[in-house]
Image (cartoon, rainbow, N blue to C red):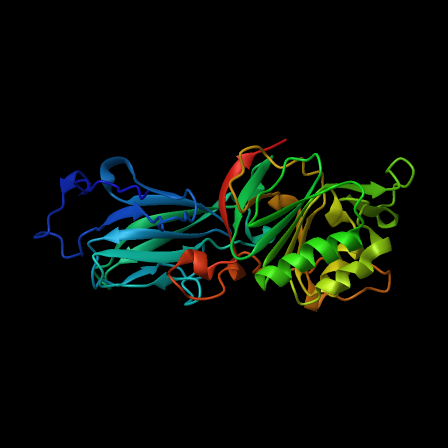
Length: 357
């Protein structure tokens, strides 16, 4: 449910402001926006000491929203379109500026590491027009890579299928399959993935939940480029059965490899991306098992160790490797249309962080 923030008396320098003395527009009430049946995340708005301004914390990469009460007809914008909250038309959506309860949708920008020395950046949301505009909300956008041992709980929108290795804590998508140890990957593709696509007509997200191991072990081969991944799903997924992925060409948009160290095998992930045309997400370190209590259609993302391969853009290097080349706009691109209904306009979204070893 929405958390409505009570209006408070606003003071500057100890003097109470009144509508007669202050030419600026009155500060509206600010509430966390929650769409019925769907929550864009636990970002929260709250008063600072003395009630002079509302503040809100979100994650870099997160799509969020607020509800303004009592701001009908007043212009509201971010004070710096190039800072933490961009004002571009595809990411800033003010769906009904004359409504008594006005919903504004926005995005927390992710900065390259070279431009993000501090753990957060800040933008101000301002109401009114110069010279009488005033700040209504301060948005602090936190970079989750600055915090150790944190995963990002991420919700997946659209048709989704989870392949869960038998014996592991399972992710719960719209469709789910427990893959036993005796199943070949070709059998999984033909009788699980393609049958699901045939039945439901589309597949936005394929989640592969299994142990990933690089062979040979580090003590026998220290050169990472000579070690190759095996995903222990059924009889295994590795470079020996890459051709099975060809059957999924153009049929899935995102492939989330929730497997340890799979992202360290650059060529494997790149081959999967090229053969399917999908965006492939993998991790370069041990990820651990799915945390307990994960909600339906959510996964945990270890963002500091995440790599993305964009299928149509992947090219093999002379060394045979295929570098991770996912777009820097991966998280902002999750909004694929300007619709105030978040569930219908997002492909995925960060919700919150959780601690994990």
